[in-house]
Length: 114
Length: 110
Image (tube, rainbow over all chains, first blue to last red; front, side):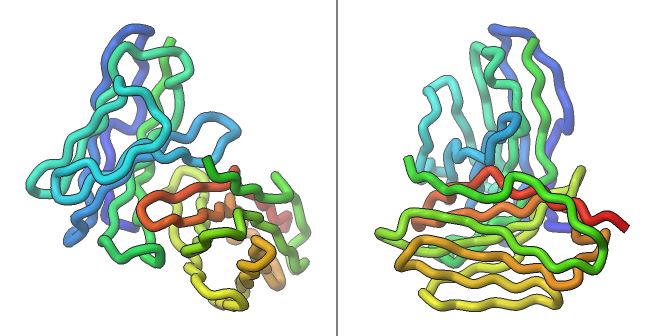
């Protein structure tokens, strides 16, 4: 087990709604990144937070936003949900060790948008 | 957008068979290549991190090699066991962003 926990594990929303996903990082890790895995795809980088500041963003629209708290836990918020937002959302924590640093993943939150 | 490709997409092998998969990635501006193992209903777990051309890593029956000049990495599993059944993901690391392939789904038939 990695010590990274995500909630909720599953949820269903309708188009236009908003969703908040939560992640508690592994103890001692100050960096959290979020990934979206759509069906048949590999995980796609959404953004990364380091010490409460966004520290890199992938090719996702502004309606995907995030927060990192002083205890390094994090939230992913998605506004104006679209059908294509249906996916598994993975959170990963790490230390800022550079390219060789590994990611420690949670089990993911599976979002279904109807 | 960096393109990381994995092949095959899926394979089924008999228990005891050895197998290997491929990950190809951009050969320019290489930083690190990661392999993750992802069992169903669990979280992806790191297998190997490789940073230097020619790196070879081994963990039990699983090993990996890296060729940064031509942009590929191989993952080998010797004597596959049913517990090796999982999706194997490779990821190209640029320093603050990981680019994942779509994974190779391995099923080991007892």
